[in-house]
Image 1: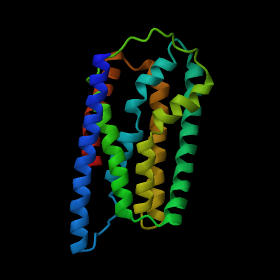
Image 2 (image 1 turned 120 degrees about the vertical axis):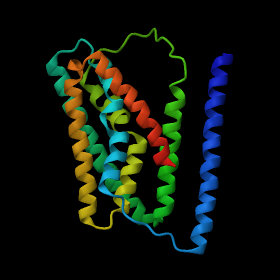
Image 3 (image 1 turned 60 degrees about the vertical axis):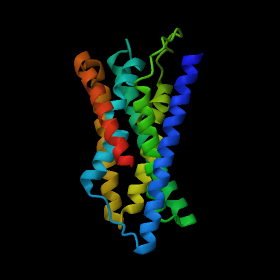
Length: 230
């Protein structure tokens, strides 16, 4: 009980500290914007791919998908991966349409939108890193029987399509100055979804050592995600 309380208190303290840092940063940005107009430029394609790959890419999928498809045949693995990819793509398309609609309806300035997405990305990434130091508790509950319903939840959402991934997608589309820029963002997201599909299909054949390496690489990229959020 005391250990659990300390862990929760520590996570709360980290989140509060993060909010204080971001609040100070927003005050500085507000002061600078009062002196001169804030210039908003579109993100380079390489940065868009890096952002989306970290937040929607296959690193965080390998572990959960391997657990879901344990002792499953190849046909089930392929069908589950295909459905999850389809559901994820449709969810991202819906998020893009809704984001564009509400941004136009409420007239949210791009700097404010960028700050909001940065806060979400920073806090979630920081929380994921802190959780790496939390002792793993053994779960005595047996794993549920694999079924195609897993393709929608928890696989498509929130494993593949993360909340902060949706936030980043909305921001990139809003920062795109024309239709061509928005199509480029869509191509990047589609390429990552195809990569996720390939990785999920090949997950049963990925050696344990390689899978562990990819998970460690995902944790390292989580540190980069904190920096990107800031």
